[in-house]
Length: 217
Image (tube, rainbow, N blue to C red; front, side):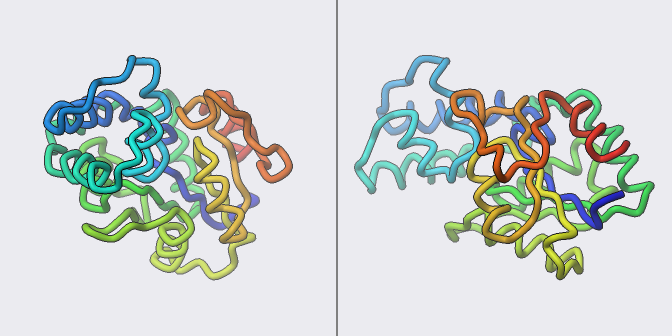
């Protein structure tokens, strides 16, 4: 194995969580009197920081309204919504194989940590991860900070021994800033409308099979 550790983004990389995310976003929009955009626009909602998601999809620039939309999303996200997600085909097998090879595994997501941990619990993935890291309530985290926290919890000090797997430019930028290699999960949401910078991505995975092949699993 070429890496000591692999860090996964969650939404659009480990798990297709789009049904729960979009449902919760629409609820917040309705409660705040914001028109619901066309369904096709919601591909862009998943990946960026939450306030930015609302700004991208609705075009709203009013800071106070964006705060209310983000707060409404968090207030209306319930553990029951987690069950709407689906682990990507082959991902569970890849996680188990990496774990059995002694590779340290982490999750770095901008989702609130408590929901990220509830998600890995629900899908039976928690025992395979050395760290599940996300954002804290009331703190605007970025992917770089969450990745560094994840590496610290895993006891990893050399970023060149780490692969970050993600489905968006935000994941890619986080990996670049931290100094890890990056694998682009093209099957997720973030790269559906824009192509990854292949100069930094060491793997372009059209599906989980591509990722497993790159990792030698």
